[in-house]
Image 1 (cartoon, rainbow, N blue to C red):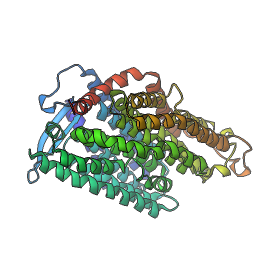
Image 2: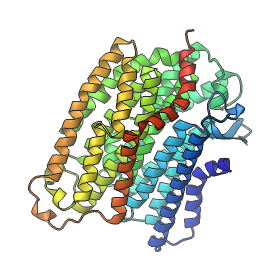
Image 3: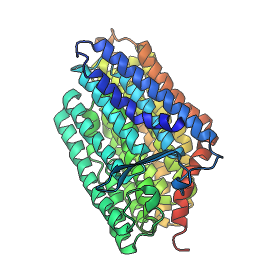
Length: 504
């Protein structure tokens, strides 16, 4: 029964779109109710399955899923021409990322309640985007993985180009073309993996049992790793993120920063590092050098911007750089920290972009120099923004502190001098992060209130619910980190074992 429920995660959003097809776009309230109900149901379903995976931690796993500790393992022939199978399964890492996605999708639907334009198409695109992200995190077959991975780029472009603001066509095209460039690198290496393995299989589980030729790994790993890293804004492929976020509607910014940008880091860990561990040991020290921009210069660029979305976008680039620092550490603590940061940053940016969208809907500006004193009129939204800021600067008690602590400790355990230097710089950059977050909050929330904002209203019940739930997730992970850390260690162990066996 659990296996059936697990497979429904990506099917339900797709069915929701089909159910809404015959309903006229004039019935906006009915359409929004259906989509909100669907998103809420998937949220509760995924939370139940998180509990089931956690409860089954000590039980034997399907031997066909080894060496990964996968639950709800499903393997069905799909495309015989390519020998592709429908293979899905859940371990601690991807079930928690599925939970993150379900929370952000649910929140995105609620904050988009008053979206301008054709609401029927907009909510259908949210569900299709959710389908693609769920599919990526569930897939254990590389063909299935890539199909879902490509779906999200098209959905993102349509949502930005049709429902965004400012330079929306430019932002949408920049995002889509950059992601397409990354996908082309991934596709080239996927074919290489299939033919070089000699086992005629696309299964991640089966491919992990094969020792790939070193000459193949040396060119395939950097190509695949950087292809995935494009989605996660690793320097020098970070340039799509600020323009894409600034042009996107609120829900799209939440989904892009909250879950889509984690798909790249997840692919780097689950596919590139797991399947090509020898090359990972050789190439990842060079990746550390690229992180100087992400973790050090990113906060300084955020400091000089006045647009709330640009500030948050560069903040995301910095925080995502920490994920790669944890991956590059190649230590159990570093990998755990990177995994925790994926989840923590998802909730963090979800809350940031949600509150920014709510404030923009009322003030019609994202320029912090045009604001001031709005905490008097919107105390709840202001507190939500401040809580997101506290989590972003790694304040103890929030999830960011736990994730970043693991990353810094794990990275410093690495004997590489460069890794330790970058780690120290990353720790020092936390100060810069605190400066731009506190400066932004002070300028927009305190001081004299402009006359034009005298009629502002605070968040409604629906908006307050989103803020409370996302803030509660940040606090829950920060205050109760032990269970999630131990839970994630089960997923990290097979990947670290593959890497640690190299050179023995």
